[in-house]
Image (cartoon, rainbow, N blue to C red; front, side):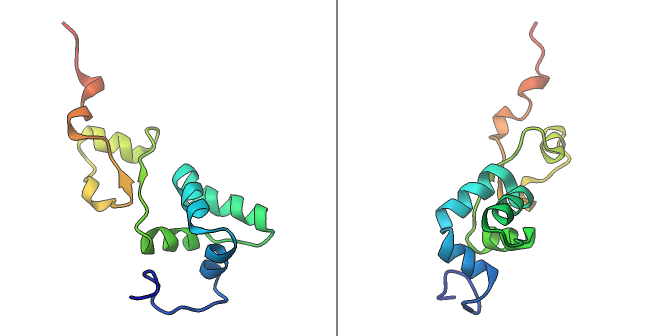
Length: 108
């Protein structure tokens, strides 16, 4: 894959338009800060053109972007309880294993 992970390089796709007009750094910054749904919504308003959340998901997958997990997320709660396997969520950065039960310890 010579085209930065993109299989077929087409100039008129929304992915290519975003990379050309907004830039990868800004797109990654929005995705890390807001996630795929909210970043697509904000870009849609900014560009006055509909941007699908799946476009942001696609970009994050081909560029191997990662972001810290939201501490308010149900995934994080499941992770703390031991019900979520972090290896299935390669785009999320989970806290270190030793911090997993930090709020479950009781001071005596």
